[in-house]
Image 1: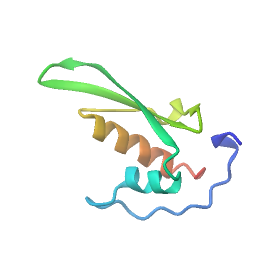
Image 2 (image 1 turned 135 degrees about the vertical axis):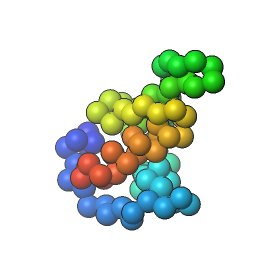
Image 3 (image 1 turned 60 degrees about the vertical axis):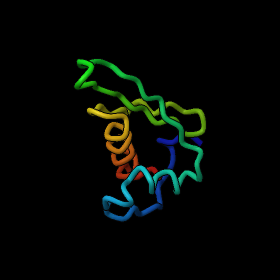
Image 4 (image 1 turned 90 degrees about the vertical axis):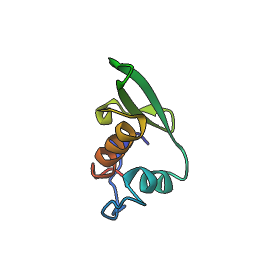
Length: 87
């Protein structure tokens, strides 16, 4: 089933420094989520990254996020995905 055809039932906890949406999303997906993370610009001392989640081979461009680090971009994309109502 495609991700956007799902009716989500998962309720995610508010993120904490030790357990953000990225960690919770990985638990929910049982480790089946992967990430396409690319450096898309910025100077060497201030890079910019884009993270796109891929779930069961489905590239979820809708949740693509940009950040100053790979982790920040992934966490933002995970938050958008977790709060979408499809998990």
